[in-house]
Length: 122
Image 1 (tube, one colour):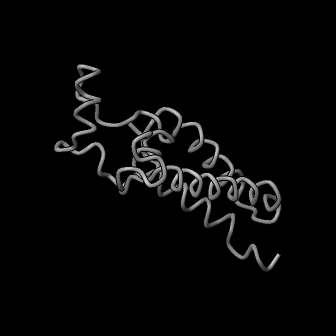
Image 2 (cartoon, rainbow, N blue to C red):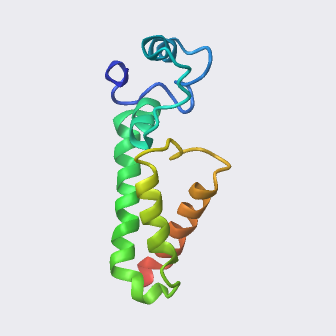
């Protein structure tokens, strides 16, 4: 279904709504009331298209880049690196990349903020 709207997707949280016709097609084909894509990258592709996937990929890569080069200076133990790794593995099987009120999303944002804080001053 992402091939029909490849660049911008169907819109944030618009695909898996109960009244969504494309989601109804997926649910009819699978014979199951599918709540999400069960893969964060695929769900992001359906919602925001390739633009959203590329932008999120750049943010995630920037976080790992900062973790690689600023780990010794941040001095937060392994918190930021572990949260980035945990988040990266969990989004392969769960669709919560852009879900509000999610603990793992909040921890991911905290880890990114911790790693990138004052990065321009270093």
